[in-house]
Structures are given as C-alpha cells and as structure tokens.
Length: 153
Image (cartoon, rainbow, N blue to C red; front, side, top):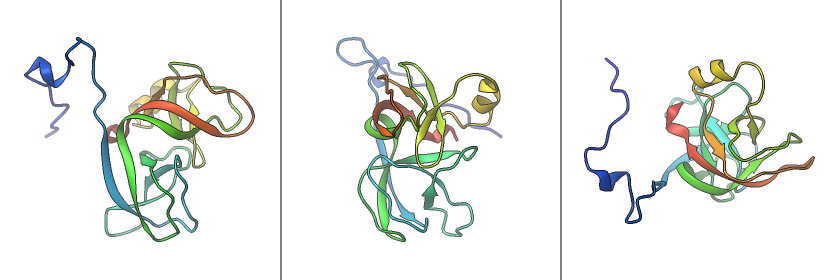
C-alpha cells in the first residue's frame, strides 16, 4: 500500500502571512562512505552498498539524490545534508548553462539541468530533485540557488 503525498489540512501549513508558499527546510545527519572528502554544496546519493542505511556517497548520473552537503567532511566522517527547501550553495552547471526553472538531476557530485530527451522518464524514476531559481553559466561548476525536494527519490 502506498502512502502517497500528505495533503495539509490547514492553509497555514502551506501559506505564510502574506499568502505565499513557504519553503520548509529539512536536514539529516549521515555518514560519508565515498573514498574522498566532501565539500559544501556537493550533491550526494544514498550508498545502497552500505548496510547501515544512513550512508551517502558522491552523486553520479542515474542515481537518486539524498541531499546537498552543508559542511566540509573527510572521507568516512559524519555530515549534515539538506534534503528539502531553498539552498544557495549547491554545486551546479558542470559546463552546461542552467536557466531559471530548469529541472535538476544528478551528475558527478553536481546538479545538472535536465533538458531535451527523456525528461519524463527521469521524472518517473525520481531523479529530478530540484528546480533552479537563478541562472548559472560558464564552463566550471559554481554555487547555484535551487529549491530541493530530495525525498521524491
């Protein structure tokens, strides 16, 4: 039986005092099982090979995202990741320009825009984990601003 999404019964759960949607933030403490240190803004995935159920590793394409690293951590250390809400430290771009409103999917430790073919299949697979709120251009990775919802994966 699928629980589906919870639907708020009180408008105050969704709307703020001015009638605008408020982005709630969520964080969790996890263990870094990648072979390298993690930096603020790195995109991470669940490490399904680790038996403890709370481990993450560097993100790769086609693997659902667990969250965004919020502090520097050495390999095999514990770290707080953000899983939901507005984030302005996520590492984006990877040489592909991002425009406002782009859906984001995982790349190698970064968020990349989902453009072109297979957008629907990525949505159905739970790979889309954020929406770009600002544009990011250039050839190198840089900090971007997104709204996250990593629990969709």
